[in-house]
Image (tube, rainbow, N blue to C red; front, side):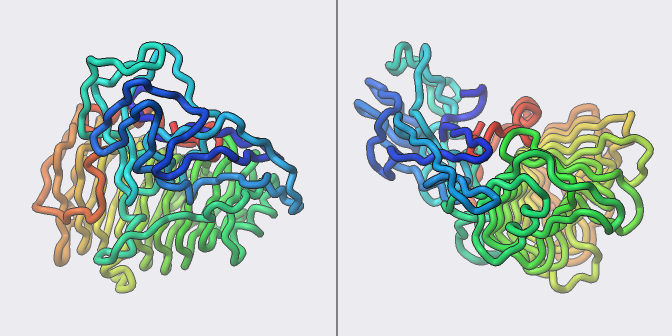
Length: 471
């Protein structure tokens, strides 16, 4: 397992025209077969203890991931069979929703470094062992220590998992467990993404012909969809539009715009209307025209995790990345626009990292860097009209106004700055009051600001080797 990330799931590669059917899968609360057997067991806080084997007590079924059960359905609608995993599935901390489907078990090669613990049912994530328990030849080391923090286990977290500001929990599943469809043309992608059925869609290759202004290719995504790149770096040359849709998962895609401008052009991704319970994970949004990723006009309960919001083209004066609400006069957004940003990387953005109105915005464990060859990074996190922001444990590097209070206005507009790290920054670095308390669990996997840079730089973006991978 990679440094700093826990063992939550084991990735199962999916290839074009085929899928993997797991026949020996993990049983919730049961003993997995074919996996690694610890002779003494590893105890993780809040997690499961292995006694003569690995017992998954907190795992949940992968409902949001793209698990093939009977073969992949190609764009022509035929099933091509698929393969059978004979090694079984080992649940180390539980399978994740929207995350990985395990195949083949876990092989110990000189020991297992425990960095993440296990995930419990109900949406809380695993605990991270900072000292690690090192197994030698499969047995548990005796010198490791257990801590109470860990990483996001590649599942929906934050506001996307709530039914509203005052509502209960919501299980973000996207297309659920149905067999994925592999698409190799933009026409097929548009058809399946916008229809009225639950879909798991795997994108094979770079699709779309690009756009300029408000003409060209645009992908409409409707409710109960999982849209995911088949491999790392999967490109989409089309703006994404999610309007009046719910329960959507978008992962592992690189969207590059034609460069920023001051026109009211298409954003790389725009979420609006009555859209809610949207999870955008491990994607990259570069050089958006009006913006990289906007959430406006009454949308609600959105989470962005492990994304890159970047600008790479010089000579463009409108590198304004993430806008929340279009104006101070947007009554449909009152009481909505609740958004979580966690483990994202803003690269060379001028402003709007993000800039908000109305919402309850949680900006936690993100990285901010600048690039003078692209343009100045002027404003960081900006709270505007009636916007309540909790800016927590982020790492700001070379930002001229990382905590921007200049647009603070209206009832309840506040930005609380907690535990942030400022490196080579100028301008304001202090908050303005006390923000909301998030109604979801996140502190068990929140990082100290000093840990953010290394992990975000390593794992953010469209870096997943397969649709079910969890680094």
